[in-house]
Image (cartoon, rainbow, N blue to C red; front, top):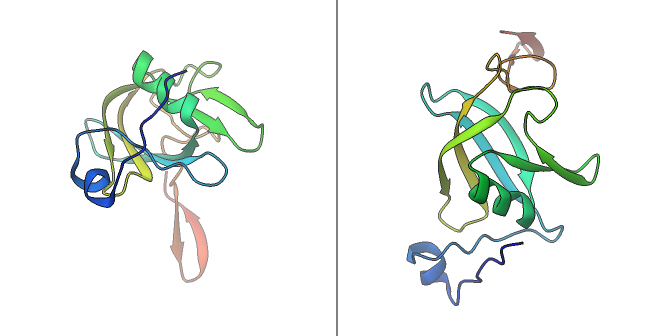
Length: 130
């Protein structure tokens, strides 16, 4: 598995050219996936170092399932593989943003919805907007 660097200081972390992801105490980093062509927010998930390394190596999104405690290749069983067009990190490298092109029928959510963000809060209640 690829070993990631640690930034020597704040300036290097925020302005340097080295990928130095800051995983949390559980070894995870937040990951947001959006549709590369439409900009639609598709999902939020977690990655560990192995998931990030596999994503970089294969060009397909891999995540870490906290509930199952295992690596998860998005779409391996559902066909909803996410081909990565671009990966960005935020300023302090504790969150990654994947711009992806969903395969299959384009869905991203395990419920079958196109996006995991299919409900809107209206008057304190959740209303589905598919």
